[in-house]
Image (cartoon, rainbow, N blue to C red; front, side, top):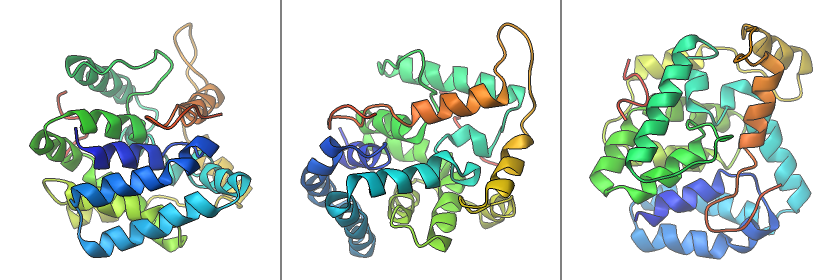
Length: 240
């Protein structure tokens, strides 16, 4: 098991008191494996300190503003590639099959492309395989890191670390294309509404509305962080 990926999965999960209490253990896991350059570990220390010492409600509010309300920072990988297109459904099926083949069972309500869940899976794989899998969404992770840098968010460090560990680095032109997409501030409600409005509304017994899809994403963000208590297969990404 690669404990660094397990720690990152916890750090990107919805913050809880249990997760705050586990920060020293998470820090020890990252430091103990020493997979990252010292400069990135120092950046991660800033996030670890914020999570450990910050007021829980403030920490939770920051998380929601970043990852739940801002589509360009979505922790659902396929959001950045497929949006609400039909291709996303097949990509979900393929990724779920990859997890099942690796003996990782997920709840029926969980979306396979949720980054903490993906990282939990990577933690169970041989390290070279995990690095190869991580390379596939590296362009998405790099774009999220840059958007977090603009917001001066310490969460940037986790995404920089993931890009560092990926077996192949993202292509600059692909990252630039992602960064050209709208990136509204979480306090700009009008821009946020516009960003979510471009998703089509589908009808039928097996279709979710845009609102239902958003609610499903937010609920997925409350999945338990691995090992720190409860929270309130194919190519997984096109290489472009």
